[in-house]
Image (tube, rainbow, N blue to C red; front, side, top):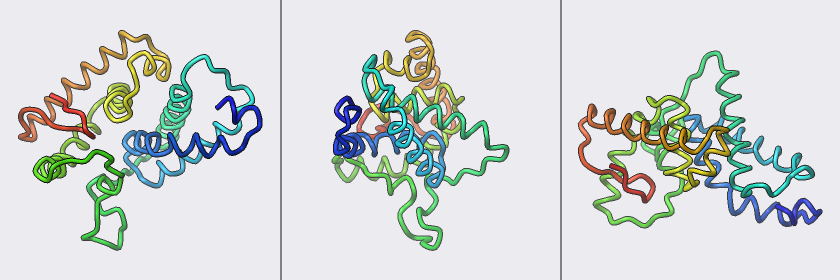
Amino acid sequence: MLVFKSGDARAFSTLVGRHRLAVYNFILRYTGHKQRAEDLLQETWLKVVRGSGEYQPKAKFTTWVYTIARNLCVDSARKESYRQADSLDAPAQAHEADGPSMGESVADISAQNPDRGAYNAALRPKLEKALRALPDEQREVFLLREYSGVSFKDIAEVTGVNENTVKSRMRYALEGLKKQLLAMGVEGEFEAEGRTVA
């Protein structure tokens, strides 16, 4: 980011290449709507470009970019008086009823064995439904931690609350997910994007 700030436009391509997919996945899971996620991702990178002159390396670049993305997601949700979200297990292309779902179209970079992959594919719609049932502040902490691998300290900076509050929200999120999944008949541990969650 400092190289981009100094005027080297090629550095921006490097930033986007390194962080685009992770930020997109966070926004998609936060909003639950592919088109809105694409729009917010574009807005996120525009804000990075516009804010590059004032950028100060007080925290990691990822903390800064996730803060931008999160704030755009929150603002977008507030602006929506009526929110109609597509299910992540609905077909990614409306005209392809048998095509891959929106959730499946997000790249899975972890290599899994076929049995685990089949189990996760069956579990994914239930997990997405359980995630949507969480309060926003718990869902965002869970998504940043489990799907994007952001530390609790950095999540605290992104969300503007202290680290203990972040840890508390994560604990409540895990309890809420477990309760929702048990109600749907899922027992034991499950794997979320390569991480095992009880």
